[in-house]
Length: 233
Image (cartoon, rainbow, N blue to C red):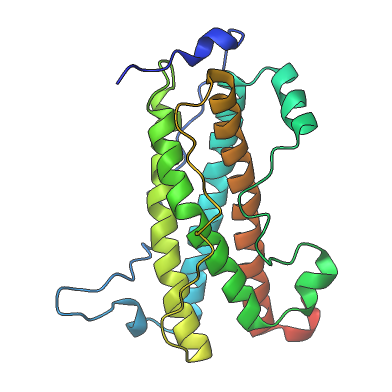
């Protein structure tokens, strides 16, 4: 397959070398996959510790998604194209989801719906991030830093999904939850125009950063409600 030469539509931008975040630090891996014997690891973790790990995972995902979006913007998106994206009104794929957005709505929803909202957001992005990774691999000049960051986020999002599902089972005593939020939200248009492809990838990164922040916010609000129910802003 011919690689796309996407820099022909962009200005040459000198970008600062960003340091790879210290992802191998004190964070404890969130691994809720089943062993060969069908035993799930996470149920042995207390609810409080599992929630802490899920929050830590969400924090890292948001941080790296923010760095990825900034790096992509510096590399491929001149200011004129940033304005074009805002004027064109590119919609996020999760716009149709019933996710609360205002502060008052978020404060009023139950713990159950907070977790459902996080799960819907996570599952809605798993497939689009795989496509985004494939698309970025076609760029002639995409730096390894950007590719590594998006790959890391894509992989960790699956771990976050596993942790949230187990957390829901622990906190709400429910069975495995599924959502059809992925259906009808993601459309892979064949052979897009060069500029349109770049703008779509930029939109994906921007929208995911925004949704990753929502995931982190919802989980931290849930944690606050567990410890100080009446003073959570």
